[in-house]
Length: 297
Image (cartoon, rainbow, N blue to C red):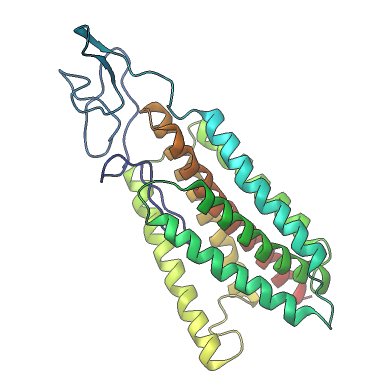
């Protein structure tokens, strides 16, 4: 399934020039039908004719064997790579928090470094989004720079606006992740084409409104149209968290389909990349909400 993130679009698990779309799980007792929506499925009749991952033994004229599990993506691969990516992000966030003070004498310098790191991280994320295959070094470098930005911005909010805001945002993000995972595994969230279309339309509208608000803020000063402050800011913050939760469900579906259809092990980095983007999005929305609530006190 091709999954996207509210901040950066990215390719889903791919084969050749195609991409994985929404699909249903393979049917038990028979080969799956190969369609554009399922690039890892095997065609009916000759289950290995179009499967580049199938194993054959042409030397001895043996019939095609079932795809080997070696080299296929597993849930352990996803967990390890996601843990590595998020771990690096957390380490660099902690270092930037400790080494880039946000007192009156240093806040401008620290904030400038944080914004610079955010821009570099955005560029790296966009580069990875348009690549056919994941590049671990690129993904980890993105996580490192993103961590620097999150450390600085979290320190500013925590020390100058709301004490304990960073920990509250972390707990909120963890709660959303756990809640969506439980709901997805329990079948309470059905990820299908209709769900995907609704989420993408909502995300596009959300991003456009935020872009317009930013333009008004840059050229008109103040808070722009007020979408990121006051009551409207609270509403849009909640909407942003809900969108992030929806994208988590898309990420879980992408991982599930990739494992079911035999995606290469290297594409577990796509899952790590996508989950990191989504979790950063949710964390930032929580941090923004906490700042709005405390600034209105």
